[in-house]
Image (cartoon, rainbow, N blue to C red; front, side):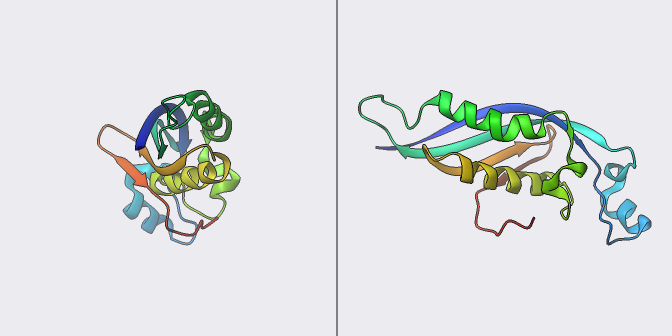
Length: 140
């Protein structure tokens, strides 16, 4: 039997949406208040969905402890209370939540092998959430 498991995690990070290839006026027009030179922060809610066959012995897709440890080590410790603009992952990419979703997916795809990574969903605000399920080249 194949099943899906979704686990939720919380982290906080700041960013400034700004593209050095655009003028200051273009950046203000495109990104609005999110282009504030001092940046702004979010309390992100990350949902990680994995799938796999239910192990008849354990009754689980994967051990939750293993998933939690991978997300803590690879995502939370890397991004929590960080300015995303200065992270290596965003040297050449604007740290939008869309791009952050892709980065998180690709990191977890490489580091968590106990179950199939289906998708990540990242809630930026109560009104905005983004999902990424792979399929594009990492642009970093």
